[in-house]
Amino acid sequence: MASVSFENRIVGVLKAIPFNKASHAQLVEALAPRMTEHQVITTVNRLDLDPGSSVSKVHGGVQYFGIETGTKPGLYKEIKRGIERRWAKDTKLGTSFSAVHTSHQGKRGAGSWTHPDLVLRVQRRSDAKHPVEFHAFEIEQVRGFDIMSVYQAFEQGRGADYRWVFFTGSLPPDSDVPWQRIKTAAHEIGVGLVLVPKPTAPAGWKTIEKARIATTRPTELQRADFLRSCGIDDGFMEPGLVP
Figure 1: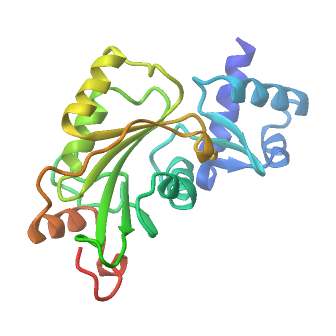
Figure 2: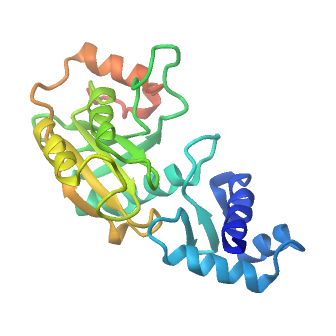
């Protein structure tokens, strides 16, 4: 019972911090005298080794990846960083990349599934048929991923060229729907699946299903509607390039 209480205390502190990250010293100070330094370190080590936990040891301290609300959720920040710095290059998407967090800046009042969590703008070769492409991402925390995530990614990615679901945790995901059904659904509608064991370690991310380009390339109107629904202005576009 004590270990569960210790976990809740640690999560409670991390939830209240921008990007949900604290140094070990900050965590120990915030939890004293309810927890000793030894209890904090032991609990963090245990949670870091548990694939079902959203608490991880990261460079500079400890981070919580189980929150998608607030103005500065660490989950989105770290996945955005990993996509731009490594994953997009490893996936050979193009020559340059720019990602924006869109889950809290998109259009409101239009119902659910209206905009993705992240949008990546990809610059391809200048002689390519379509020099600019957009990828839409649904980001799921531990135990937040199921077959509905696949259809959500597809729907809110209308107007993008590719749709993806990045899910944290381990395989098979914790879901009432059999894993094979989830993979089949993703393959049939062209949604990519990427397992993210640790958001801060993109070298360990694993592409389960690669996204396929939309069957019909978005029209200028569909692209404009997509960017508008995501709250993306012209500043996201480079001068002289048509999306």
